[in-house]
Length: 286
Length: 254
Ligand SMILES: Nc1ncnc2c1ncn2[C@@H]1O[C@H](COP(=O)(O)OP(=O)(O)O)[C@@H](O)[C@H]1O
Ligand SMILES: [Mg+2]
Image (cartoon, rainbow over all chains, first blue to last red; front, side):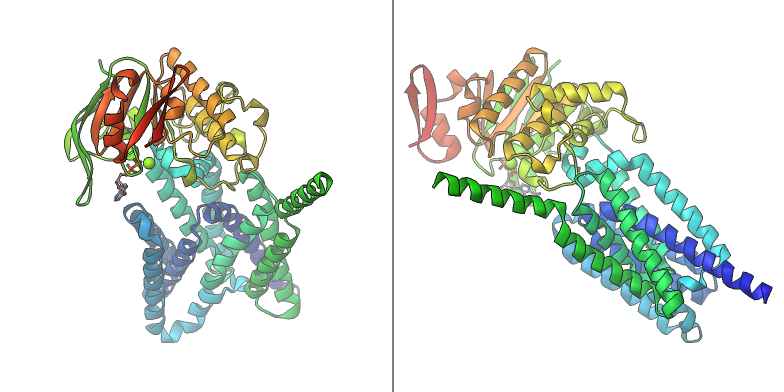
């Protein structure tokens, strides 16, 4: 009985840590992704992570390693195309998205015996995260947060105004490649926690919610982290008590939070205030 | 040494020739206006100076450097103000964030901002009369105020050359005056200011030299020598008239 409890306890701890790490990283990167209008790119990279993980299952190597390699390759490909074909980015991303998904489906069709383990990378299975995987996630999270902290000012510049950043001598290529590489790493972190399909929600929803209440990147990142932690933990708790998918609940809560943020947005309320003031002024002058 | 030297430069986008046989130079710090209609190649000319586009024929030298070879080194000595419509007016930045960006090019990418950086940024903001807005969201400012912040960012980088792309577009008269005065003061401190515009009236008084550009250089030199109805009509490809109000020249469409 004692060992059983310890066993139960340890995989809950793993799930909790994995949820925390995923929420912290996706939401921080998400602020840059949303502001730079790269969310389609995030989805495309998430699916290349999936393709990498399933390919790794086929080759009997660590799925997270496979996800890491393929997602980094795809993120570099997208950065490269983004520079060359700026005007046609929309179409190019559609193609890259399609390619990564097609590869994932192809590898999946080759893994009949492993399809159960492949499935967890598609829809997430936070309760099956192992201690070895936690160690990998910790390393990746540390790398991600360190890079974001060190390069925060540069990222802010290229997200706000890449043209001037380049014109004034910043290494914009290096910054953009690093940012997309971070997106790739983050999709690996969240692969087993929320799965490749739902990663995009954690990248976009907390950042979009935070936007409604902030005027600076710094504040947006902090708020996005809070929103992401809330939805991540709610999902985890719901999955334990109600026996439903943690990733699904997390995604639903994250989007619901966005709708609430939209309604209670301090930015939009201010607009209403101004409209009211204008009306008052008009009435007075009439 | 010339500050800028452009010789027989041709630039093409695919089969389309945007600049044809452009030759001009800047020998000492001055206020220069590049004037021409939309599509004349004004932005292209700035991009050539920054080494963002390489001409397929011709020679370019800026501050003694070849922009296509020493791009980063050169760009860090140049301030750039983009056309404002390319910037998201609702971006998540404060005014101080924007101005401090001007300090980044000369720093290591991971270095923190020092006291000096903050001082220079504040000084630059003061020059465009926006120092009360340091902590304000960029998105709360009017178009003219945003433009002044973008100029302050370029000034904060302590450039030797300042390139401004249509800095007066969509700017009210009060901001216009402040911007031009701030730029003129920079010139007296030894900065070369190049401003690109399709409306020459506002900057006319302050310009030491003008270039009339429409794919080719139609005319270049001091404004009183270069600006006449013939050159202007040739540049804008429609009849232009010069009116005299008191002692000032005003240029209008004919
Ligand atoms: N990236 C580009 N690709 C193709 N054509 C371009 C590109 N940039 C500019 N052009 C063309 O080159 C000409 C000059 O452009 P530009 O230098 O932006 O003019 P201006 O700034 O004077 O309005 C225009 O006809 C424009 O359509
Ligand atoms: Mg232009």
